Length: 131
Image (tube, rainbow, N blue to C red; front, side, top):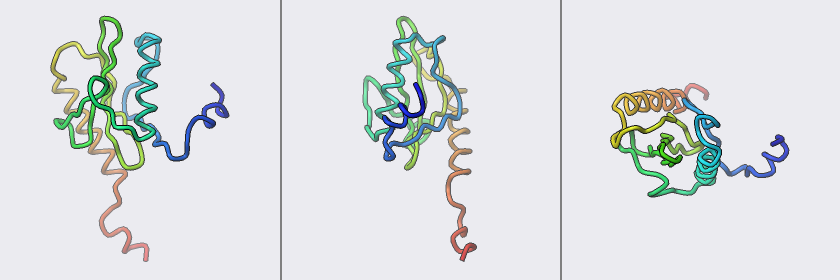
């Protein structure tokens, strides 16, 4: 897909995707799962709030965090994301092998989100210093 085609489909109001970890590609995703993931991410970019069965809140990571649920034949993929005011932040992409999300994934997502917020939030007193 050329840049021109892509930009024709992306509105200036759409939130960009900020990838902190992971990717959605074939393989390991099947072509159908990759398309489904792209479709759901596009809906998030346009401001839609998704619920089950496509997305589930993950308050164990932080308020505003969710996981996209992608069924890929016998495999289950998860895309952990955070809805920021100006972006959809991808915290991780992983294959889910058990019913519970691994503690290491939750810990890493919390850490990545904290780093992202630290870098993107205005510093206290910054507006006064620029006067």
